[in-house]
Image 1 (cartoon, rainbow, N blue to C red):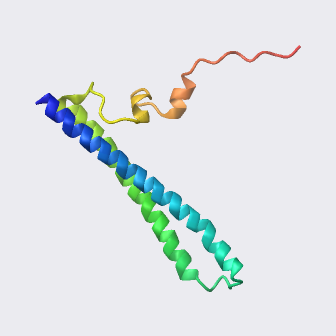
Image 2: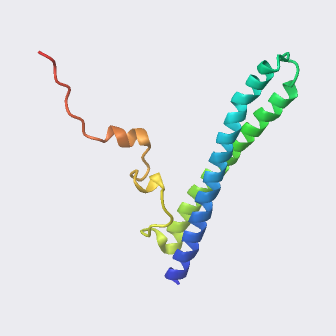
Length: 124
């Protein structure tokens, strides 16, 4: 039973990671358009009024992707929580999660703050 759950969890983890990567890639592609659209408008010597609706659609698309990304991240976190509840708590599922490296309930800033630092030395 545990072996089957682990196989299913790994399959889902790979699919979630692929979805996350696809959304990030789509955001990056739209980022290119965010730069290209005003460049194209200026290059064609068009008024800001021309193409205003196109800018609005682009803004909506970018916002929608960021909302979608947030939802997929929330899904990822919920599946991680579910993994713990179905007996896979100490099993490594998927690959590439920063959350596996960062201590539980820590943020990157907290993790960085926990890193010992050498005291600053004064120049003579």
